[in-house]
Image 1 (tube, rainbow, N blue to C red):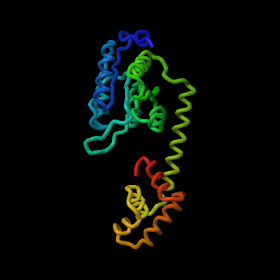
Image 2: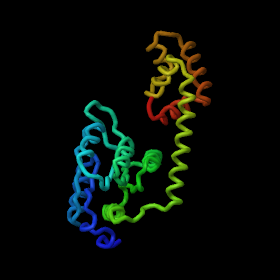
Image 3: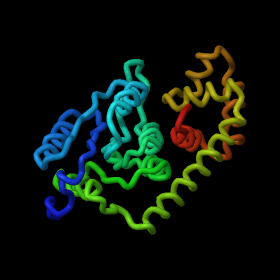
Image 4: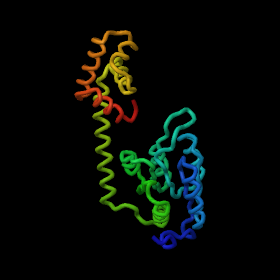
Length: 230
């Protein structure tokens, strides 16, 4: 793409915010955008609450948002999807970038109002072209692609509800047993941990498998790892 024809910085007076925890990427993109004459800024990543405050200090423009923002000072993982609704409600355009294959996250972001997404696996110049295209008012996905993302989001939500329904059947002890299995502990170790017989542990495991509607411990562990919060 020809950068000059995609966006004229003299006509685009709003800021471009880069919200990403990768310092090298953020700095490189900010410098490239400023080199094209844009008012680009990168925000320090501390917490979702702090980011919301910093965002409110700018007039709305374009936000280039990473979905994986790392951990906050308390060790909690920060999900960029939580910022999409805040940004869009305030009048921002949001372009999602993601270093991982987070299809459910991208779908959720687009359902919340993001204008599109671009993987970090793209070349830097390719990613820059997409940012400039959005700044220039060009769509980065077709209506068909938009509807496909919305359908994916609805499907992922249905899967999460079904997973929540199954996990909600488990007793407190069955959840504890499943957590230990997910950490790699064997039935004998779980028996020693709870100071109960192997027969009791096997009973918990059989009940757990039946409630989760799976046939093996491996399937149960794989299922629970799909849960957003466990």
